[in-house]
Amino acid sequence: MKLLETYQNFYFVGIGGIGMSALARYFHASGKKVLGYDKTNTKLTQQLMNEGIDIVFEDIIDDKITSLQVENTLVIYTPAIKKLEILDYFNENKFEVLKRAKVLGLITENTDCIAVAGTHGKTTTSTLVAHLCKESDLPFSCFLGGISENFKSNFLYNGSQYSVVEADEYDRSFLNLSPDWAVVTSTDADHLDIYGDKNTIEEGFKQFAALVPNDKQLFVRKGIEIGRPHLTYAVNETADYYSDNLRMENDKIYFDFHTPTEIVKDFVWDIPGIHNVENATVALAILNNLGVNFETLKKAIANFKGIKRRYTKHRYQNGKIYIDDYAHHPTEINAVMSSIRTFYPDKKLLVVFQPHLFSRTRDFADGFAESLSQADELVLLDIYPARELQENFEGITSNWLLEKVTSNKKEVSTLNDAFTKIKEKDFDILLTVGAGNIDTLYDPICDWMENK
Image 1 (cartoon, rainbow, N blue to C red):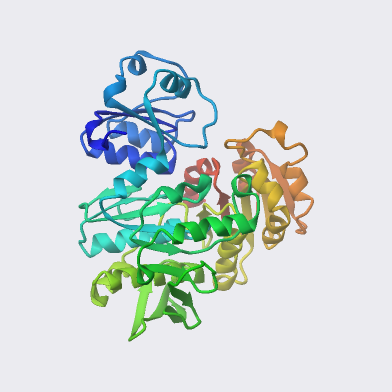
Image 2 (spheres, rainbow, N blue to C red):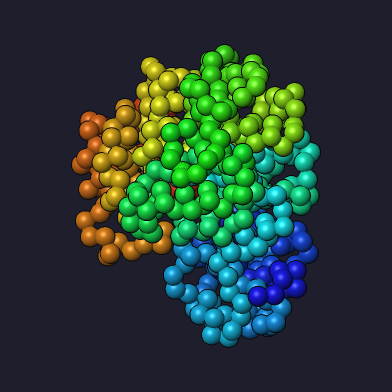
């Protein structure tokens, strides 16, 4: 194919996705004409349009599409979209049509690419690496799977020597990358609709790790077998890089950081959870290996604000707490619930959870039931189908999942009824959790809690 720079127009099919929107912002910032389609108008698509990107929400072949020329237009699509008239048009008319992952791989080929992979933790870790790069004033660009609270975007351009990339395992997308540095945070079973079983997904991560040319630039959470030499990281146990002495003071988390040659005491930040200290540990390890001093890194860690929908916490004057999180796998939900129970052991916890995908709900039903049973009260929303159809998953419903939950106080609700139900509940802490459109509850809940 032609070099990316030779294209003047970039059409994104599924532009509202978090990974797609980062690419769209990159080309828009490069002075290219960017336009696209998505089925749903969201906060993110509104932001893209406010930035000057043209988006439509109907699957029709309009004048803007027919005016595009084959020779100077690149079409980028997400594999989550299976069937679309717009995509058929571009294919039938011989446009260059590439997956998002392929294009991201091409962009990062000519940079020192820092790729963060894992079934859990990759968004927080990659966003933290990008934040540390920015605070250290390194020449980098980043393509993230979440919205950084510090720079209010999933994309940032601060130069082109380094690129920080969230390496997505879905559809084996991460195998398109050319990582010079890489992290593997976890290899738990997920996306079984793609991989089939746990062994196959573990093999996919081994293939990703094999792409890194230097053993000393591959960082893997201790305990994961990755099939080649690498550096390890951990929390509360010895590794090549590890953190320990975790404690909470005045709602802040303190920890000590160990390299192979020294101990740096008293890192402090606002982000709760042992799993997040684990993410910080590997981010610090990479930046230290890039030559950034610990004084700079301490300041940068201290002012990290987190990622939207990754343990986003609000505390109100009446003492109540609201936490919103993107977790959509039992391991992730357990991590969030564990943090809440550790720091607020006596608080009454109301959980509102929206399962994501019929296949994931089916494959991990027992795990979901066990993690959700930790709630004092549960409101279980209807399953968010995303790319799947209910007719292909007969009997896999939220009512079916609810029967497996052992809590006494539990019910199923539609998304439309959820806010009304929440306002009727008695709780100390409210947790909304899930990866679908449950985020539409966030603003109404915040407004209500502020004035409650």
